[in-house]
Image (cartoon, rainbow, N blue to C red; front, side, top):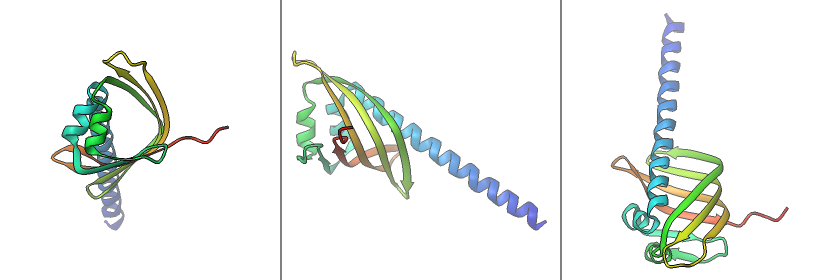
Length: 141
C-alpha cells in the first residue's frame, strides 16, 4: 500500500511538473510570436510599466525607450540556442543565446543581433509580461 501511494504521489508530481514546463514553453512561444510580428506593440502591451532592459553595450532602457527603439521595425525574426525556461512561482526566467534580425519599415538596412540573454517575465492572466532583460555580447572565440 505504501509503495502504491508513493508511486502515485511521484507520478502526480512528475505529471504536474511536465505540464507546467509545457505551459511555460507555450506561453514563451506565444509571447515570442507576438514580439516577432510587431515588437513595439508587444512591448507596449505586454511589458510592466517599470520594465528595464540592459543592452549588450551597457545602455539601460526603460519601457518607453524600447517601444521607441522598435517603432520603425516592421518585424523581427528571432531564434534561441540553449534556451532554458525556469519558473519560480509566478516568475519565469529565460536564459540562452538569441539570434535575431530586425526588419525596418523606414528603409533602414536589416540589423542582425547575437546576444546571450536573460529575460524575466511575470505570469499574469495566462500571459507572460516582460519584467526585465539583459543582453551580453558573446566573447570572441
